[in-house]
Length: 472
Image (cartoon, rainbow, N blue to C red; front, side, top):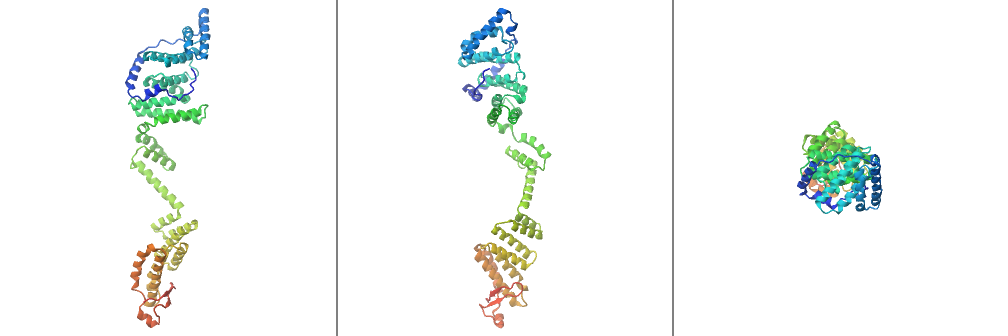
């Protein structure tokens, strides 16, 4: 057989046959006719066993027609080839020239013939010569390679019904296994897609073909065989063909049955369960399926754990919500030490101040933490609001009389004013607090008795120690 120079160039005839849905009935009819034909028994006669005169005639015809073949004059070669072939189909018993050359001669005639009946006869002669060579010169692979090339010609050149092509493709893959030639992969895929699309093949059979062909390609690519690049090309081509039916043959049910056991065997391997989840969802499986819901919940827990481990601020907030305030403060301090963002650090200090004030009632440390927060972000008003809350809350216990209490209220109002000046968005919230505490400002009569005029400065007693301007 001549080496095919363009293995993946599909003639117009093959495309027409593949894409024309009206050919199905004609193909099946032709297949039935072919199945009814009984081939004559194959004989492997070679000229070494012939009488001298016939041997000489066969050898002479062989030499003559081979010269025509070398010049690619297949028409001129035919008569002498026919003499040599009829006398000694197996040539000299060591070379299959009469079979391979005969196919080339008939293929040239086939391409020039316009009569469909005669083309069909020529096609069958080509296939017959394949069968004879396989029988007489099977080679070490038992004829697997030749069977594949026969299938290739059947599909791309000879317009053989797909049912017969498929049978030949199956036969060569069964015989050759991983050694199946790369030229077989693409036509096999096209036949499978045609058969499945026309309801002549079930999805299980189509899936098996897909898996089998991809396994062959992958094995040869991984082993870096001589034609590894061609296997890469063939794999890309055939999977492009398979893509048209992929969603129909590889459905949720198929992948669910295949992948769920893998998940159950490795339920805590994140790479495994994420691959299972992604594949099943992509193939249309319901996310509410118990297994998928279980995987989703498992990964949420994993991500939360990762977040707690890698985000100290988040971890601190989780500890706070869990009621572990001391642990939350420690985690916020870790977050501060790891952060290089002043604004972020300011908010962590604010969170510490809030816990110290509201949960531990540690007013002094809380104020220091709030001041630190305010110093790190000049546009951050909430630390001032928090200090105001501290002063307002501690006012009743500030000093020994109502005067000291009222001065603490002034200190609180000052902080509220500062909060909204720094961060105007806080105005609405702090104005309500200012209005609530305004009635608790110092009493003018008490101030007169103490000799303090309005507008004078006074120091707030107790831990607050702020200097305020007296307002009555």
